Length: 135
Length: 135
DNA sequence: ATGGACCATGTACCTAGGTACAGAGTCAAG
DNA sequence: CTTGACTCTGTACCTAGGTACATGGTCCAT
Picture 1: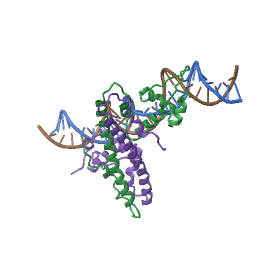
Picture 2 (picture 1 turned 90 degrees about the vertical axis):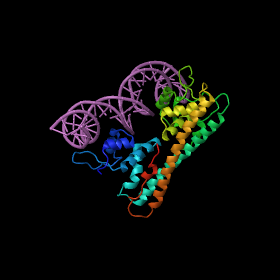
Picture 3 (picture 1 turned 30 degrees about the vertical axis):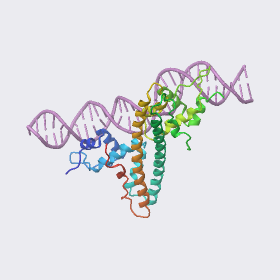
């Protein structure tokens, strides 16, 4: 078994080929080994990595932040304490996101429930979900 | 009280003035009343609306999606059943986000915990957080 | 041994979401 | 009643995150 070509990887991860090369340039995925011809040879694990990146984006992380998240594992030049600190920073981030999503979720559930059978819709305040923020 | 000028609104909502005008063009905030001079006069509620938009973006929603979320309340031409359906679609979306964030959270918590005191960091797999997805 | 499907590099182009003027009018404190 | 800070519209420009060629070299099933 020789690993995946970039085209196979793209298909499995459901992204454009160019996106993969772009991620490589950005340092989001490691440069893979090549064969004689220069063709990239990817380990199947790369699929998960790209899937992770894509999903993390949908969760509101920028590529830069995702890079930081990913670097929480592979970086061998860092101390564990450093890692721990960075992990906890991201953790706080994530908790805040979950918190706000929970608020939106509750608002929408109230909305969907209250909007059953009534007449007009003007009284369905989703805005309140994230109101009164404490930045 | 005459409402906020665009500058005051921008300051309170912590965004650029141009962003507000841009949102207006995009239909994310309603066109406010003007005074004689043409100056926009905003209700203080607009602060919450912009805050909501900004935060929803950080949660991974596009402006188009946010528009849909916001339209779940003000749209008077829609039936409650329609609203309910759309709310539930968004709800599913949000639940999925929460779910994946929970996975990331758990992964990071394991990471932060396990990375205490050990030597190398190579065994801290955050990637597993969103692996094996079921799209 | 060859032609259609892939891949490589490099550069150009695209969309979303803003941001920054320019040029002209308005507000209000002194 | 002026002057510095704001605001208006319109248009141009910018960054992030891709996406699309063009040109040329591989791969492999027939």
